[in-house]
Amino acid sequence: MKVLDLQCRQGHVFEGWFACEEDFRSQQQRGLVQCPLCADEHIEKRLSAPRLNLGARAEPAAASAASANAAADAGAQAAWLVLARKLMANTEDVGPRFAQEARRMHHGEVPERAIRGQATPHDALQLLEEGIAVLPMPLPVAAKETLQ
Figure 1 (cartoon, rainbow, N blue to C red):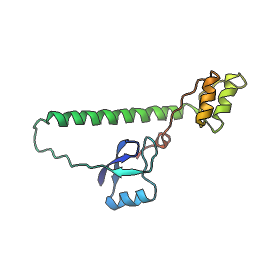
Figure 2: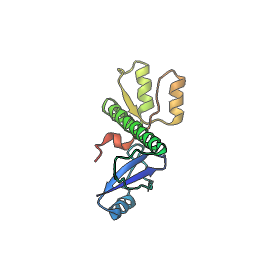
Figure 3: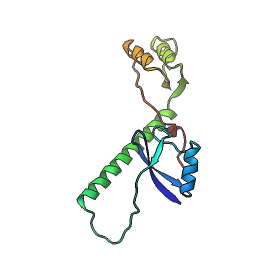
Figure 4: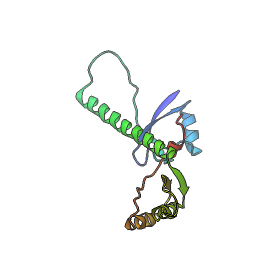
């Protein structure tokens, strides 16, 4: 098993597990490798080094700080993914009808409920100007699926 450090164009860093280097290349060429946060298919390998535990020596301060920053970034990404999955599980997807459904609820034409969907930036701005609270929030494809 080969564990690769990967990164998308948005700077999201994640691990990918593959049978071998050729398996990674094959999946990447077929568009099967995506960022779990933003679904970007433009994925590049990052430089990574094997971790060798050769004793109980203390890490230098700079390496320790870099490890802490990487852990914080990974934790933030994981928390975002958990939040996105909760949002997906607890809202109704109204797709491209989002602006119309939000207006119908605002005017009392239909019962209020938690919805999500797609709206153009223009539609979202109009909703806000009409006093309808909306929150643009890109949801990763990975929020809909179980990660393997």
